[in-house]
Figure 1 (cartoon, helix red, strand yellow):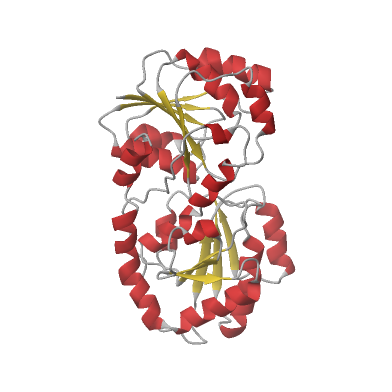
Figure 2: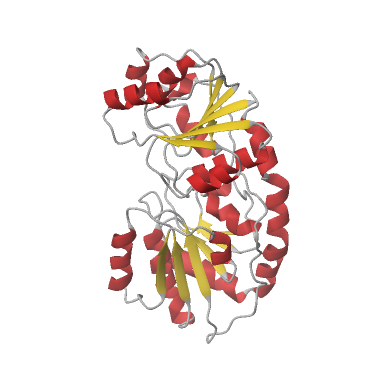
Length: 353
Protein backbone atom coordinates (compact mmCIF):
# COMPACT_ATOMS: atom_id res chain seq x y z
CA UNK A 1 0.00 0.00 0.00
CA UNK A 2 0.95 3.61 -0.53
CA UNK A 3 -0.39 5.62 2.41
CA UNK A 4 -0.57 9.41 2.73
CA UNK A 5 -0.62 10.98 6.20
CA UNK A 6 -1.68 14.57 6.94
CA UNK A 7 -0.44 15.88 10.30
CA UNK A 8 -1.33 19.30 11.67
CA UNK A 9 1.93 19.57 13.59
CA UNK A 10 5.12 17.63 14.20
CA UNK A 11 5.19 18.09 17.96
CA UNK A 12 5.87 15.24 20.37
CA UNK A 13 2.21 14.74 21.26
CA UNK A 14 -0.22 11.86 21.37
CA UNK A 15 -1.48 12.17 17.80
CA UNK A 16 2.01 12.38 16.35
CA UNK A 17 3.02 9.30 18.32
CA UNK A 18 -0.05 7.47 17.00
CA UNK A 19 1.12 8.28 13.48
CA UNK A 20 4.64 7.12 14.32
CA UNK A 21 3.43 3.78 15.74
CA UNK A 22 1.19 3.23 12.73
CA UNK A 23 4.03 3.79 10.28
CA UNK A 24 6.51 1.75 12.31
CA UNK A 25 4.07 -1.18 12.52
CA UNK A 26 3.29 -1.10 8.78
CA UNK A 27 6.82 -0.19 7.71
CA UNK A 28 6.69 -2.60 4.74
CA UNK A 29 4.38 -0.09 3.00
CA UNK A 30 5.25 3.32 1.57
CA UNK A 31 4.33 6.29 3.80
CA UNK A 32 4.29 9.96 2.79
CA UNK A 33 3.72 12.48 5.60
CA UNK A 34 2.61 16.08 5.02
CA UNK A 35 2.96 18.40 8.04
CA UNK A 36 0.72 21.46 7.80
CA UNK A 37 2.56 23.51 10.43
CA UNK A 38 6.29 24.10 10.88
CA UNK A 39 9.24 21.79 11.53
CA UNK A 40 8.98 19.92 14.83
CA UNK A 41 10.71 17.26 16.93
CA UNK A 42 8.73 14.36 15.42
CA UNK A 43 10.05 14.88 11.90
CA UNK A 44 13.25 12.95 12.63
CA UNK A 45 11.53 9.93 14.29
CA UNK A 46 9.05 9.70 11.42
CA UNK A 47 11.87 9.82 8.92
CA UNK A 48 13.81 7.20 10.87
CA UNK A 49 11.03 4.62 10.37
CA UNK A 50 10.97 5.15 6.62
CA UNK A 51 8.42 7.92 6.07
CA UNK A 52 9.00 10.65 3.52
CA UNK A 53 8.13 13.87 5.36
CA UNK A 54 7.31 17.24 3.84
CA UNK A 55 6.71 20.34 6.00
CA UNK A 56 4.40 22.95 4.43
CA UNK A 57 4.31 25.64 7.16
CA UNK A 58 0.82 26.80 6.10
CA UNK A 59 -1.35 26.18 9.16
CA UNK A 60 -1.28 29.81 10.31
CA UNK A 61 -2.46 31.16 6.96
CA UNK A 62 -5.97 32.45 6.31
CA UNK A 63 -8.51 29.99 4.92
CA UNK A 64 -8.15 30.95 1.26
CA UNK A 65 -4.34 30.97 1.32
CA UNK A 66 -4.31 27.76 3.32
CA UNK A 67 -6.49 25.90 0.83
CA UNK A 68 -4.57 27.18 -2.19
CA UNK A 69 -1.20 26.23 -0.67
CA UNK A 70 -2.43 22.81 0.42
CA UNK A 71 -4.04 21.90 -2.90
CA UNK A 72 -0.90 22.84 -4.83
CA UNK A 73 1.53 21.23 -2.36
CA UNK A 74 0.00 17.78 -1.96
CA UNK A 75 2.23 15.07 -3.43
CA UNK A 76 1.53 13.47 -6.78
CA UNK A 77 0.88 9.78 -6.91
CA UNK A 78 -1.66 7.10 -6.16
CA UNK A 79 -2.63 6.24 -2.58
CA UNK A 80 -4.77 3.39 -1.37
CA UNK A 81 -5.32 4.95 2.07
CA UNK A 82 -5.13 8.48 3.43
CA UNK A 83 -5.03 9.23 7.15
CA UNK A 84 -5.75 12.78 8.29
CA UNK A 85 -4.51 13.05 11.86
CA UNK A 86 -6.46 16.22 12.64
CA UNK A 87 -9.93 17.75 12.34
CA UNK A 88 -8.53 21.28 11.92
CA UNK A 89 -10.05 22.81 8.76
CA UNK A 90 -11.42 19.39 7.93
CA UNK A 91 -13.82 20.41 5.08
CA UNK A 92 -10.97 22.17 3.25
CA UNK A 93 -8.61 19.26 3.67
CA UNK A 94 -11.24 16.74 2.53
CA UNK A 95 -11.94 18.86 -0.56
CA UNK A 96 -8.24 19.23 -1.40
CA UNK A 97 -7.89 15.45 -1.12
CA UNK A 98 -10.44 15.00 -3.91
CA UNK A 99 -7.43 14.91 -6.27
CA UNK A 100 -6.95 11.32 -5.05
CA UNK A 101 -9.23 8.31 -5.13
CA UNK A 102 -8.77 6.69 -1.74
CA UNK A 103 -10.46 5.84 1.53
CA UNK A 104 -9.84 8.63 4.06
CA UNK A 105 -9.59 8.01 7.81
CA UNK A 106 -9.77 11.04 10.12
CA UNK A 107 -8.38 11.08 13.66
CA UNK A 108 -10.68 12.82 16.17
CA UNK A 109 -8.68 13.50 19.30
CA UNK A 110 -11.01 15.62 21.42
CA UNK A 111 -14.78 16.20 21.69
CA UNK A 112 -16.10 18.29 18.81
CA UNK A 113 -18.56 21.17 18.89
CA UNK A 114 -21.81 21.65 17.01
CA UNK A 115 -20.02 21.68 13.66
CA UNK A 116 -22.12 24.47 12.15
CA UNK A 117 -19.19 26.27 10.48
CA UNK A 118 -17.86 23.01 9.04
CA UNK A 119 -21.34 22.07 7.83
CA UNK A 120 -21.74 25.40 5.99
CA UNK A 121 -18.32 25.01 4.37
CA UNK A 122 -19.11 21.46 3.32
CA UNK A 123 -22.11 22.66 1.28
CA UNK A 124 -19.53 23.89 -1.21
CA UNK A 125 -16.48 21.83 -0.25
CA UNK A 126 -17.93 18.38 -0.75
CA UNK A 127 -15.70 15.33 -0.32
CA UNK A 128 -15.82 12.77 -3.11
CA UNK A 129 -13.92 10.07 -1.27
CA UNK A 130 -15.31 7.78 1.45
CA UNK A 131 -14.53 9.34 4.84
CA UNK A 132 -14.32 7.33 8.08
CA UNK A 133 -13.84 8.92 11.50
CA UNK A 134 -11.55 7.42 14.12
CA UNK A 135 -12.42 8.98 17.51
CA UNK A 136 -9.88 8.16 20.21
CA UNK A 137 -12.52 7.14 22.75
CA UNK A 138 -16.21 6.37 23.13
CA UNK A 139 -16.46 9.68 24.98
CA UNK A 140 -15.24 11.55 21.87
CA UNK A 141 -17.38 9.38 19.58
CA UNK A 142 -20.53 10.41 21.46
CA UNK A 143 -19.80 14.08 20.76
CA UNK A 144 -19.81 13.39 17.01
CA UNK A 145 -23.53 12.61 17.05
CA UNK A 146 -24.27 16.22 18.04
CA UNK A 147 -22.21 17.76 15.25
CA UNK A 148 -24.06 18.82 12.10
CA UNK A 149 -20.94 18.10 10.09
CA UNK A 150 -19.24 15.10 11.70
CA UNK A 151 -22.31 12.95 12.32
CA UNK A 152 -22.66 12.16 8.59
CA UNK A 153 -19.50 10.03 8.54
CA UNK A 154 -19.14 6.42 9.74
CA UNK A 155 -17.04 6.13 12.89
CA UNK A 156 -15.15 3.56 14.93
CA UNK A 157 -13.33 4.08 18.22
CA UNK A 158 -9.58 3.53 18.07
CA UNK A 159 -7.71 4.02 21.34
CA UNK A 160 -4.06 5.00 21.49
CA UNK A 161 -1.49 2.31 20.57
CA UNK A 162 1.16 1.37 23.11
CA UNK A 163 4.49 -0.05 22.04
CA UNK A 164 6.50 -1.97 24.66
CA UNK A 165 8.32 0.63 26.79
CA UNK A 166 12.13 0.70 26.54
CA UNK A 167 12.44 0.66 30.34
CA UNK A 168 10.24 -0.38 33.25
CA UNK A 169 9.39 1.64 36.34
CA UNK A 170 11.29 0.86 39.53
CA UNK A 171 9.80 -1.81 41.74
CA UNK A 172 7.55 -0.22 44.39
CA UNK A 173 9.26 0.32 47.72
CA UNK A 174 7.96 0.99 51.21
CA UNK A 175 7.97 4.71 51.94
CA UNK A 176 8.28 6.66 55.18
CA UNK A 177 7.92 10.29 56.10
CA UNK A 178 11.62 10.75 55.39
CA UNK A 179 11.46 9.16 51.94
CA UNK A 180 12.25 11.16 48.83
CA UNK A 181 8.96 10.33 47.14
CA UNK A 182 8.86 11.25 43.45
CA UNK A 183 5.61 12.00 41.64
CA UNK A 184 4.90 13.33 38.17
CA UNK A 185 2.56 14.05 35.30
CA UNK A 186 3.26 13.86 31.57
CA UNK A 187 0.92 16.00 29.47
CA UNK A 188 0.95 19.05 27.28
CA UNK A 189 0.64 22.20 29.39
CA UNK A 190 -2.72 23.07 27.90
CA UNK A 191 -6.02 24.36 29.35
CA UNK A 192 -7.79 21.07 28.53
CA UNK A 193 -5.62 19.43 31.20
CA UNK A 194 -5.76 20.18 34.93
CA UNK A 195 -2.22 20.73 36.18
CA UNK A 196 -3.37 23.14 38.89
CA UNK A 197 -5.23 20.40 40.77
CA UNK A 198 -2.12 18.19 40.55
CA UNK A 199 0.06 20.98 41.96
CA UNK A 200 -2.41 21.70 44.76
CA UNK A 201 -2.68 17.97 45.56
CA UNK A 202 1.10 17.75 45.67
CA UNK A 203 1.22 20.63 48.17
CA UNK A 204 -1.04 18.59 50.47
CA UNK A 205 1.09 15.48 49.95
CA UNK A 206 4.22 17.35 51.07
CA UNK A 207 2.71 17.70 54.54
CA UNK A 208 3.04 13.91 54.88
CA UNK A 209 6.18 13.58 52.76
CA UNK A 210 8.17 16.82 53.12
CA UNK A 211 10.98 15.53 50.88
CA UNK A 212 8.63 14.79 47.97
CA UNK A 213 9.27 16.08 44.44
CA UNK A 214 6.85 16.68 41.54
CA UNK A 215 7.89 16.52 37.88
CA UNK A 216 5.68 18.14 35.24
CA UNK A 217 6.76 16.94 31.79
CA UNK A 218 5.47 18.55 28.61
CA UNK A 219 5.58 21.82 26.71
CA UNK A 220 2.68 24.09 25.91
CA UNK A 221 1.14 27.54 26.29
CA UNK A 222 0.75 27.35 30.09
CA UNK A 223 4.44 26.85 30.87
CA UNK A 224 4.95 30.36 32.28
CA UNK A 225 1.53 30.50 33.95
CA UNK A 226 2.04 27.22 35.78
CA UNK A 227 5.57 28.23 36.72
CA UNK A 228 4.15 31.33 38.39
CA UNK A 229 1.47 29.22 40.12
CA UNK A 230 4.14 26.90 41.52
CA UNK A 231 6.07 29.91 42.83
CA UNK A 232 2.92 31.35 44.44
CA UNK A 233 2.46 28.06 46.28
CA UNK A 234 6.03 28.20 47.55
CA UNK A 235 6.91 24.95 45.78
CA UNK A 236 9.61 26.08 43.37
CA UNK A 237 12.27 23.97 45.08
CA UNK A 238 10.16 20.82 44.82
CA UNK A 239 8.32 21.15 41.50
CA UNK A 240 10.22 20.90 38.22
CA UNK A 241 8.69 21.93 34.88
CA UNK A 242 10.77 20.03 32.35
CA UNK A 243 9.12 21.23 29.14
CA UNK A 244 9.16 18.94 26.12
CA UNK A 245 11.11 15.72 26.76
CA UNK A 246 12.10 13.25 24.03
CA UNK A 247 12.28 10.12 26.21
CA UNK A 248 9.43 10.27 28.72
CA UNK A 249 9.89 6.65 29.80
CA UNK A 250 13.41 7.28 31.06
CA UNK A 251 12.08 10.35 32.87
CA UNK A 252 9.30 8.33 34.56
CA UNK A 253 11.27 5.21 35.49
CA UNK A 254 12.22 6.45 38.97
CA UNK A 255 8.82 7.89 39.91
CA UNK A 256 6.71 6.41 42.69
CA UNK A 257 3.35 7.64 41.38
CA UNK A 258 1.93 9.13 38.19
CA UNK A 259 -0.68 11.83 38.83
CA UNK A 260 -3.06 12.84 36.06
CA UNK A 261 -5.44 15.75 36.30
CA UNK A 262 -7.65 16.62 33.35
CA UNK A 263 -10.98 18.16 32.30
CA UNK A 264 -14.05 17.07 30.26
CA UNK A 265 -12.48 18.75 27.22
CA UNK A 266 -9.85 15.99 27.14
CA UNK A 267 -10.28 13.29 24.51
CA UNK A 268 -8.40 10.34 26.00
CA UNK A 269 -5.34 10.88 28.22
CA UNK A 270 -2.85 8.61 26.51
CA UNK A 271 0.05 9.16 28.88
CA UNK A 272 -1.96 7.36 31.58
CA UNK A 273 -1.59 4.16 29.57
CA UNK A 274 2.09 4.87 28.95
CA UNK A 275 2.65 4.97 32.70
CA UNK A 276 0.72 1.73 33.19
CA UNK A 277 2.69 0.04 30.40
CA UNK A 278 5.86 0.40 32.45
CA UNK A 279 4.23 -0.63 35.75
CA UNK A 280 3.93 2.85 37.24
CA UNK A 281 0.87 3.25 39.53
CA UNK A 282 -1.52 6.02 38.47
CA UNK A 283 -3.92 8.36 40.28
CA UNK A 284 -6.21 10.05 37.75
CA UNK A 285 -9.31 12.24 37.44
CA UNK A 286 -12.40 10.03 37.24
CA UNK A 287 -13.68 11.08 33.81
CA UNK A 288 -15.23 8.86 31.11
CA UNK A 289 -12.35 9.08 28.66
CA UNK A 290 -9.80 8.04 31.29
CA UNK A 291 -12.09 5.22 32.48
CA UNK A 292 -11.84 3.73 28.99
CA UNK A 293 -8.29 2.65 29.78
CA UNK A 294 -9.35 0.79 32.92
CA UNK A 295 -13.14 0.67 33.39
CA UNK A 296 -13.10 -1.19 36.71
CA UNK A 297 -10.19 0.67 38.28
CA UNK A 298 -8.02 -2.43 38.57
CA UNK A 299 -4.85 -0.53 37.74
CA UNK A 300 -5.81 3.15 38.04
CA UNK A 301 -6.78 4.77 41.35
CA UNK A 302 -9.50 7.27 40.43
CA UNK A 303 -10.12 10.54 42.28
CA UNK A 304 -12.81 13.21 42.09
CA UNK A 305 -12.45 15.68 39.22
CA UNK A 306 -10.79 19.02 40.07
CA UNK A 307 -10.58 18.02 43.74
CA UNK A 308 -7.04 18.43 45.03
CA UNK A 309 -7.88 17.10 48.49
CA UNK A 310 -9.34 13.89 47.08
CA UNK A 311 -6.43 13.41 44.68
CA UNK A 312 -4.01 13.88 47.57
CA UNK A 313 -5.93 11.45 49.79
CA UNK A 314 -6.02 8.76 47.09
CA UNK A 315 -2.32 9.28 46.37
CA UNK A 316 -1.38 9.09 50.05
CA UNK A 317 -3.39 5.87 50.47
CA UNK A 318 -1.69 4.34 47.46
CA UNK A 319 1.77 5.37 48.62
CA UNK A 320 1.07 3.73 51.96
CA UNK A 321 -0.10 0.51 50.26
CA UNK A 322 3.07 -1.09 48.90
CA UNK A 323 1.23 -4.35 48.25
CA UNK A 324 -1.27 -2.72 45.88
CA UNK A 325 1.44 -0.80 44.10
CA UNK A 326 3.37 -4.04 43.63
CA UNK A 327 0.30 -5.74 42.10
CA UNK A 328 -0.14 -2.82 39.67
CA UNK A 329 3.57 -2.95 38.84
CA UNK A 330 3.26 -6.62 37.84
CA UNK A 331 -0.20 -6.69 36.24
CA UNK A 332 -0.64 -3.36 34.44
CA UNK A 333 2.07 -3.88 31.77
CA UNK A 334 0.54 -7.25 30.85
CA UNK A 335 -2.93 -5.70 30.64
CA UNK A 336 -1.73 -2.89 28.36
CA UNK A 337 0.31 -5.21 26.17
CA UNK A 338 -2.60 -7.60 25.62
CA UNK A 339 -5.23 -4.94 24.92
CA UNK A 340 -3.54 -1.93 23.32
CA UNK A 341 -0.74 -3.15 21.08
CA UNK A 342 0.48 -1.05 18.15
CA UNK A 343 -0.29 -3.96 15.81
CA UNK A 344 -3.95 -4.12 16.83
CA UNK A 345 -4.21 -0.34 16.51
CA UNK A 346 -2.71 -0.12 13.01
CA UNK A 347 -4.75 -2.87 11.39
CA UNK A 348 -7.97 -1.83 13.14
CA UNK A 349 -7.48 1.79 12.10
CA UNK A 350 -7.76 1.20 8.36
CA UNK A 351 -10.33 -1.58 8.53
CA UNK A 352 -13.70 -0.24 7.44
CA UNK A 353 -16.66 -0.45 9.85
